[in-house]
Amino acid sequence: MNPIQESINVPQPREAVYDFLDVQANHELFTDHMMRDWRCEGPDRGVGSKVRVNAVLGGRKDALEIEVIEADPPARSVERNIGAGGKRVATGTYTLTELPDGGTHIAFEYAWQKIPLSERLAAPIVRTVMRRSIQRALERLADQLQVLETANSR
Image (cartoon, rainbow, N blue to C red):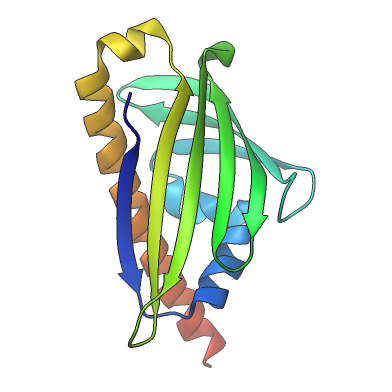
């Protein structure tokens, strides 16, 4: 299945965006519409930080393990997630680019490496649900970054 790519621009500097995204526990704040029951493991940030969650998309519940496998501060972070009892393996990559007038372009790519047959057969539906959920997560991330910026400016 082809990767899903979504993006958003935010006014915060790239380093601040990366610092927020680097802490796995922060991801719960903008993805709890599609992932619940967060349990953090390993280091708080960077390569090796992990979470175990339950994905709740499309009326289904699926246990996932998400681990940061690459980090290139402040430009890129790659997470590997394993679900469907090991039948699904995918990566989520955040790429952060400085905008010419300030702020950051956040690009997220979700790419499958291994896909269960049921998801391959339902690819158009799976892609639609995933795309909408990822775009919503990016919008919520932008909101969280604004809240953090406002709190830090006080």
